[in-house]
Length: 368
Image (tube, rainbow, N blue to C red):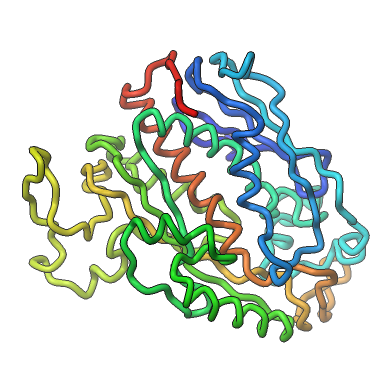
């Protein structure tokens, strides 16, 4: 078990390092006949790019996807789909100077111990947020499958630096989320967040936040209890995103403050369909989708690379020392992580939909 693959019927294998030749994914199990092109994948990848100068990173990659296999004449063939992005714009010089000095908050130390110092330390190597570009590529394929089932996955920034969006209806969220540089559909809160990010950037510090994700029109019955539950698999996928430190569904930790009469989602019938009056469970009961919208939230930590002086050690000399991380780095990655969260949720839903047998092995895709 190497830990680089996720899924059973829709299996995604991630490969590559931040400063290696390329990053990419292999998607195995995708049905044949699905309309797919590099342009479709690229649209999702472009959402992951920095949207504004204040989120500046030292890296200015074009991130152009190349499909190497599994697609012929614009349709999937049923063979494994291999997609890559070739790394071109990077400078490893600064990492050579600190290769034995672990950056606080990064996986430098744990990777050094785990792999005996043979790990690729440049830009965080395998533990860099850059590998999430591969997740987005696989997620784009998963979204195409889900669209056949009329399942929509929608994520957005709920909170950054303690500034939280107001309650909004679904149509408002859809309409405004991509209008905001921070992908917060509450445009008033978005302006306040932008101002805070600007101030924190001047201070040489960083900010974290919360992403909320909805999966709509998910049929009841998806999930494989007791160890391969739907929320368990979604959580596992979300924790593969390097910056994620918490995941909750529905009311999450707030259910601990409620009574059973307050927390229970009572049943009713609408248009001949079984629904619940509330959705405190977040659309999952007993590890199985209930037919209500799946609602989860993801806590994203502040980027660890900051220009403030921090304490560290020299692992070779075993001496204490201080460290200032050089170069420009993202002040806040929450907006860029929004499409990554969508992708990971979509990957798991596609896998469970295929395991449930509601996706045929050959599809007739007429989606544009």
